Length: 279
Image 1 (cartoon, helix red, strand yellow):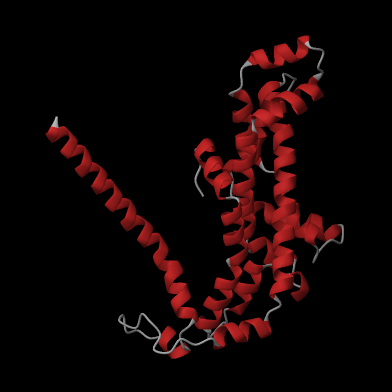
Image 2 (image 1 turned 30 degrees about the vertical axis):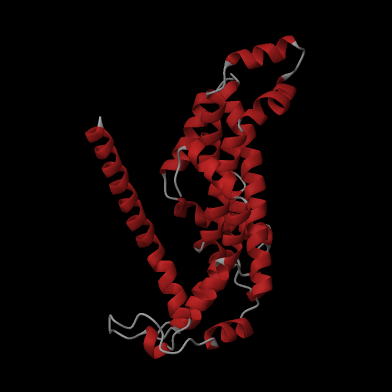
């Protein structure tokens, strides 16, 4: 019995050590970004592998980016992008997922096959038609242009459909006996039971919207309508890049997602664990 207990403790210790090493490995890029933000350009571009910490902790990069970039405007545009994409994605995916998962209508499987097909092809092939649609209606350089590709999500529809299919049929039968129609059954009975899937979809949508780079750079070229990702991309020069300023701006740009994660940490963990997905 003692040997089994000892082996269990050894296995637990090894697992903890491996997890700690993996966590440190994942933190290295973030730590490197912080250190580079306080370095000089010479130190940041040095090929000496032992130049890890700055000789003098400088704040020049933060001062420069705060003067040259309107972060309040960038935060506003980015948060509006995340908010509207999350609302639209959760709303449309919840209704479409319920229709595909619980309702029986002609052509349901064929329509859902189109949804799956959209998940299988690269998102880049939709950029040209989506850009033409936005351009034709005169909505370039607007928040709507940023939100447009994420208003309907094939992944969200699939995720919510799976959530609805996992619910027992007895719930709908009981609601029907109580006199509920399809809309009432969906709104008051079924939708609240898929809250964990909605939270997971909201998390995925927020992270994907925050990381989105190509689409914001294409549709919003006005400096007052840039988001954090596109503004950071424009800092990188063709021939020379000031890496301390780029890292300082990247560090400041991380603040919204860090704050959101701290506030909704419990929902993040529950949503990821329940959905079985990963970022």
